[in-house]
Length: 308
Image: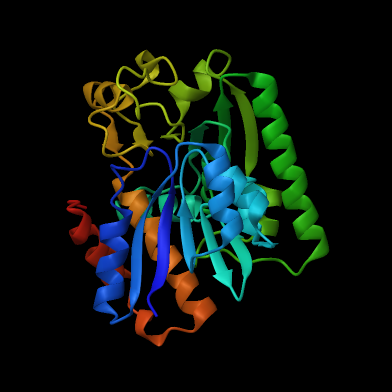
């Protein structure tokens, strides 16, 4: 029987996930089929999740909180992000993960970005931003500043993240980083400076940052502005936008004009997909998916037509 896997979200017609994952499953000789679950209404998405008629899901905007709520078991990555972008159906029980941050950092490091000792700004306060905040913190920066439209909301998000991370550190054996040379959960809690602000109150932090990551959905709709005043950008900075496949965003145009090193979300999509395949391999003990990470990355990038 063919196993069904999907990407759940709306709108997702631009998504390269189906061609990427199907290329890997074909390469591995698996009878797995990955398709679209493009559901415009929240009630439809909740019913789809409740039916549990899938082996695994990738979840994108706007249904990460709903996927998190539907899960029976929640990995630390999903707990800290307050949202899931991967659900795995193991014997009827849904296990939630969030691979956005891990995929983002893995891709940026592959592209030559170094986080150790740097100042990093993360824009946005949703599950994607939180997942990236945590993965960036594990990469060893001096500080991470979470910035949103509302300073008080950004404070609450950072405070909750720090409290939940501290609680995890206090009640479990220290959880190691996913990559050698990165920080464990306890090391993040003790060593990395966590700050917050709004786009207006954090102008100095934006101008001083070494790396700026826009984890908002701005740029997915025509005419969307950049999240902050792009006049603050300078050529010494690296700018990353999670959006891809929607043409040049306002942030991308401004970053290039300022001489910044700029990358879009295509590589992050591939990076988190590599992590997802590893999760499925381990949970279902599928030896055919024991493919080297570099080979997985190239297979998926080529299938999507990305030049990475």
